[in-house]
Image 1 (cartoon, one colour):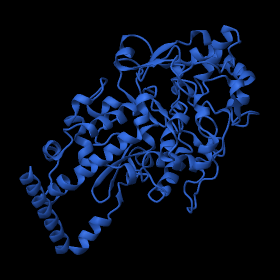
Image 2: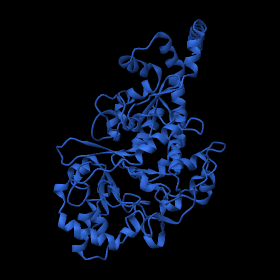
Image 3: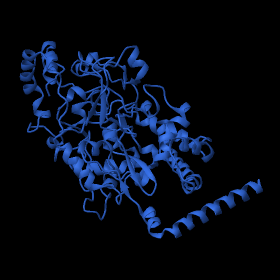
Length: 479
């Protein structure tokens, strides 16, 4: 044992000598390597949205070369599901890209991958079982399994195979590394990544006794409570759906998040970036503003015109104007207002999870920066938002507890159990297919009796005659 320690010490000393010699031989290039901070840039705003960096690599960036081989080295830890490798978690790949949508890249000084907005706000949709998948930017990522991705990383960090002897052959099979790079990865990068994964395991320990959210959902502010050292027994199950982020212009200066806790789009975007790794010094505000400007006018997909009964939709529009527009149309009397819990009647966990104490902590973020937070507030209900592209925002309610628009309007049809994460569209009931053998095989079993998953409330329109509800559903196709 003593000989092995001595041998490792000699190798490490040799490595350091080699690195120092290389740095001394090329002082200026070496300085550039050490201080390098180069995000991948994209000429088009859609590509910047999909692949650009918002500075999230600073705290939670993962070495690119290692991240790429994890699904191969630890294939036995992948969850069941559609696709290969990272696709198992709902990551979406486009032809010609070696990273999935929502995964950014930055050289700092080695290549690091991070997360950007597109990961949680891009979906796929298939019009039928055998049809190709359509990528929908700005849509809720109804197929992305964030919790399973985190669980995978936690398991990898605990696995004895996460070491240089296992990882280096996999990396070198895929990428050419010079001798200094091999030494650097073996004795610095891989051990430090192991430490980082141990931190991830500690930070997400709360997941061990929290209800599994399943695809398309996240326990929104629990990560911030860990950051601010909240006690676990003071947390509520704040699980909620990823929202759509297209057409942001009609959301400017309107209460954001499901509970309407912040009217500032910039604060919302910065807080989201910081939640997945950006720091107040690394967050790329210029990129967030640039992409945010593009999102102002990104329009949702339109429902196929040939599938709309136009006379019925015209009748439904009159019903909508009388029963729904005051809350859901910009300029409506109650648009952007928060309906109190006793009135809306939906699951209270999400709004209860965001306490006044957390408000006070959130409003300390960015102290000393021009964008320092000041707009977070405590509410006691859920906000009335617009219904743009509502046909492709399933499942419904803030916690995704209702699979289709039909089930929303016909409360007695709301299922106690259904399956989420399957991307074939249900043209009849307006949502993703949520039952049947295929949905069961590829999806997540959503049980509305689990804490945070209740499908009660939002009874608006429930007392309309059935014929009026069907007309209203037809009109909602046009939103």
